[in-house]
Length: 186
Length: 313
Image (cartoon, each protein chain N blue to C red):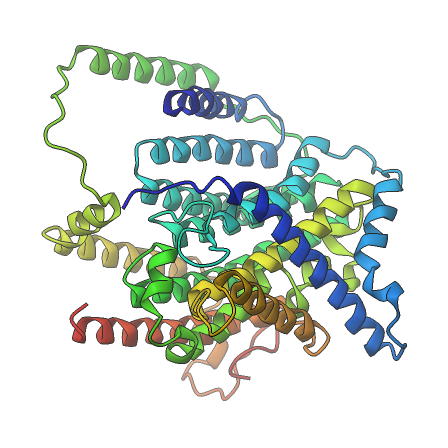
């Protein structure tokens, strides 16, 4: 049963990944990439890592939808409605892809993989949690807070209007001067 | 404890879900008739069946140069993700979910998140401006409702000290979480309604867009989409039962009857609220969600953390 599912999911993931570059619509490309990721998430379920699979499902879906938002914000092509080519700089990309594939294939085939030691834990989710939040807690929290700080900094740099635009140079305006009215605090 | 698939649930689950969806649609039609000041007739009660048959017999229209594949995939996804999410919901006592996965809560959240994709694809596929705007509206709505919903669901899992739905039900046999986490319950209903683009959150298919994502849907496409949306509503209502209302617990009646009763009650509340609450503009709800709902749910999460830790969980 497990290997049957593998032989369905793995080709789906690879084919969808290839199709991303064969279609001429941004929406199709975006969501084919999602299909590819969902195939990989299914493989995580096969490996008894349901938590990783579920989170992958959730995160990739969110990611692709956020990508749709970026599509509106940054492309010359509002809403991704016009057909467009999904491949650019083909010669370099092809070389990079072939070299990466060869490199990975060589590593996979030549490395002497260690034999599995011990048995899988009864509750994989619990052991992932303990692995991340036990001895590695400091690393994860530092990285997490640093990432959050970067995101906030990026937003502050990118935003069109900051609090001085909204509340005046001395931040003494009672109601913010916003283009759109309504909502909380007005 | 390994995950066991309970096979007899497989044929039962879709039937029960569809029956509840029909009940919700029927209730909505009856309440609509009452609001319109008409005497409720049998005709109102059978509205979902009549509409279903009518849509089945209607020939499908199409638009100029639609992206048919994307369009149909989006339409089909709505009922499919609802039923997949329902796989972890127990229909009665312990061992009556299709599979009581050890990550049940994540499973439910993840599949419902695919609704964003579904709605966007339906909006985009028809090659129609109004339906595209509807699709984008749902994307904006998702950015508002998902975080409070996820934090609330995580809070419940933390209180039950498990991601397994069965364990969460067991953990609240002393005190239902609706009593312990009333804020969570309210936020769940609010964001759950937003996830099902229902009631005040129905603007992705709003009348101001002539139907939004549904504007170009006809015939069997429309039937699948609308039935799927009622299924999502049912799944949202049904998941509130193991999360907040003690699952099948209750006196006299068997577990499955209590689950059915509680689900119907939550469903009734959601359907009834549709005609009581005004539509919410998405920019306002966005701000409300991020400025009010997320901090509130985070404070609740923190309180639950402290309680769980101090009781030696």
